[in-house]
Image (cartoon, rainbow, N blue to C red):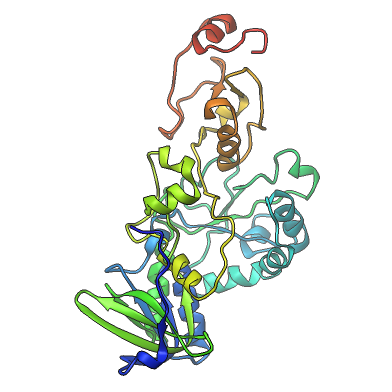
Amino acid sequence: MSTGIPETVAARSITDWSDEVDVVVAGFGIAGGCAAVEAAARGARVLVLERAGVAGGTTALAGGHFYLGGGTGVQRATGHEDSAEQMYEYLLAVARDPEPEKIRAYCDGSVEHFDWLESLGFEFERSYYPEKAVIQPGTQGLMYTGNEKVWPYRDQAIPAPRGHKVPVAGDTQGAAMIIDLLVKRAAALGVEVRYETGVTNLIADADDAVVGVSWKNLGKTGAVRAKSVVLATGGFVMNSEMVAEHVPWLTEKPFVLGTPFDDGLGIRLGRSAGGETCMMDQAFVTAPVYPPAKLLTGIVVNRNGERFVAEDSYHARTSAFVLDQPGAIAYLIVDSEHMERPNFPLAPFIDGWETVEEMASALGIPYEAL
């Protein structure tokens, strides 16, 4: 693994191009798959280069949740009113460093995104899951997946459920359905996909414009000339050197979600052509304490006995707040009437006590504060 920036290759040094296409896409996860399909649907000749032996990337590990709103077919069918404006206000409120134009485009195009996904050949179930959960346990098509109903956001935008899940039961690999459909659509549109073939460098002309990519397939190498290059190769969670450089606190955390190819190469390739990065210090990190939702009737405190986050927050928001507490430690405290075992092992059960005083003493929390 490396944090190094690959060198760009001068186009004038290429004497034999293996291919000439309109668009070359690096990576066949959901981003690369969508880009390839859309380009081909508009008449472009598209080539996808994927380092793995199959399509999917980290996407194929995901549960299949899509954050969509503004009045989707599932929202309407289940009686939930929503608008692009309220979706925009909510996302603007929760974003740490919001980009209004990008958020506006996302919200205004959300119903179209919903329709586009269903046009791949499946249908979100027209049903609603009312409980608080990380992801619907069954095939329910809609639930609250964010902080829409959580203070203070519930006062800043009208809440609406926007978590759309593909009709696959369980909390993992539902998104693999979308990958399979994208692979079929790409094939129908004439997109060529080469597996076990990774981009190694960008190729630039005398004006530093990117005009292609170099590739490697086992012991073979080559170069593709392209009018457009799309880099869609995922993140860098599997690159320990990049993690240590950009997100050093994450090096202490034992569980990561990704594939061996999440090494940040696409990011570094982008930088080799002059691209700029942002928010490299950010990570999606979580240790959910629910379901069951009953657990959220308890309180979450730090080791000083202080509450610091609304307990019904989205699990990643709660986890982010925990990381800012002394020692990155927090406790969920429930009484006997509200105690159930959490479904996830990331928040282990510690113990039970008869009195608050006994609990405070055992946990080393100031009793008066607790």
